[in-house]
Image (cartoon, rainbow over all chains, first blue to last red; front, side, top):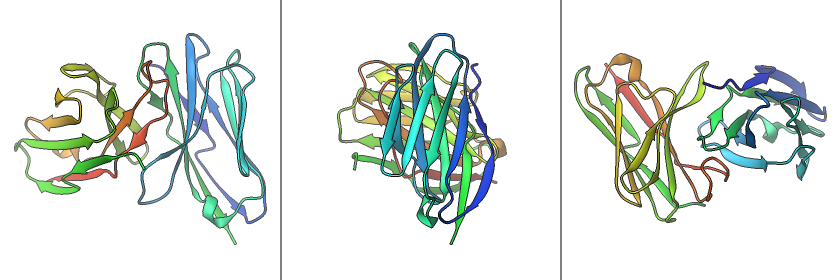
Length: 111
Length: 115
């Protein structure tokens, strides 16, 4: 069973701070890397699906990068807002396999 | 929003009883998944389906079975529920051509408590 690691497990920032999280995965047989945002009492929602080494994707103040050769992806949030408080999940797809999720990074943003 | 519904949304049952959770989609997506969410574990894959009558095991499949007799329905069955199966269960669907490639759309979750 492949291992998808996320760090940190949780963090707390002040409104306006920028922050980033890491997702690490085995770099062999990579096919796709997903990021999801999961608010409390809701269902996870997709942020990005990334497939190419060097991919960079952006959605508003949130962006992600991907390095498949070294097996990591970064998620960045610029100017954090209280509504960004959520758990951020990454998930790995190796060719021919269903998504395997990391345990997530829980972000809390104080105003 | 993707048309995906789970039922029941909440269920309390006793150890040893059978339980079936239903996932229904109106999107005609090929792939359907069952995940469970537990504190400290995130989302773990139980079973998935890649078509009618085509299913496969995930990382935590012991004690669970699934069936998909129609494109739109994916059933998760606990033949004899145990307390360790107390969890929140999420169904997800994907329209990707390749397994795992496309984004997942999640249902609202089914909270199961086994006493």
